[in-house]
Image (cartoon, rainbow, N blue to C red; front, side, top):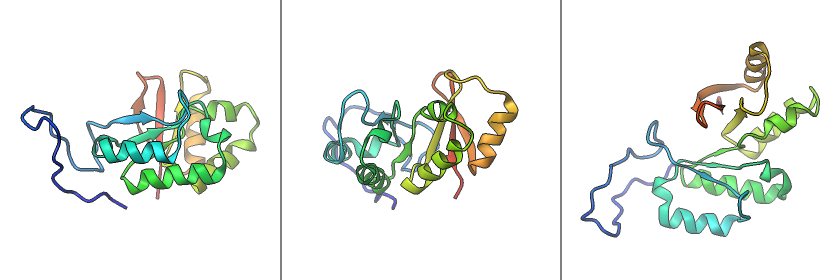
Length: 161
C-alpha cells in the first residue's frame, strides 16, 4: 500500500529544505536501523512513522535481530513498514547463514520472502566468496542487485516480484 501524497505542514516552514520526490523514491533515500542497537517494536515504529514517516524509505534490521524475535512480531513490523511505503532489509546477516551449510541458504531466503523482506543484504566486507558464488546466490534467490551500499562494503539485493 502506497502512502497518500498530501502536503504535510511542518514546523519551521520558513526554513528551506531540499524537496524530495514522493515515495517510492529512487534517490535521496533514507534508511533507518531496526531493533538492534536498542530494542523496540511496533509502537516505537508507529510513533516514528507518525512524526517522520514521509522521510523514511527503508528499515534495516541489523545483526540478525529479527532471528531473535517472535515470527508474528517480525511480520507486524514488516507489514507496518509496508503500510508506510518503507522497504525492509535483512541487514548483513546472510554471512552468518552461509557458514551453516549449503542447504540452509535456500531456507533462509524462502523465509525472508515469506516474512515479506524486500531486501537481502550481502555484506562483502564480512565474507569473501568467489564471484561465481555471488552470482549463483543472487540468481538462486530470485533477487537482483539494487545498488552498492555501506561505503562499497555491501551489495544490496532486492527481490523480484
